[in-house]
Length: 137
Ligand SMILES: [Zn+2]
Image (tube, rainbow, N blue to C red; front, side, top):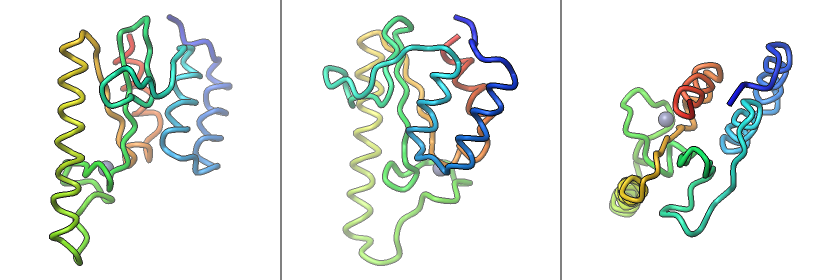
């Protein structure tokens, strides 16, 4: 499937995403849309109700907030355990992380491919765009 936007349109789209400080999920939706893909949102019949589902690609995309999904990348500037109430936060965030992994495995078992886009990665929109494009093929 071709990228249906001209380079000018795409850069306009990117600067709109950037200037509006769009929520991560909305930014990814606009990006996938601008690449010319059709998708469905939050399909409840799939493990983890993926943020975006592309049935024809057998592909799903999760857009994860770095704090709530506890981004495991040590260079992530957002993820991390709060200093207070550690006994509350650590098991809570760990459960979310474990659940995310289970969902990915369950999806793969059903023949779906899954990509996770992290909130902090959206500081470099072209890089995310390239990852998404490579993933969707
Ligand atoms: Zn992150």
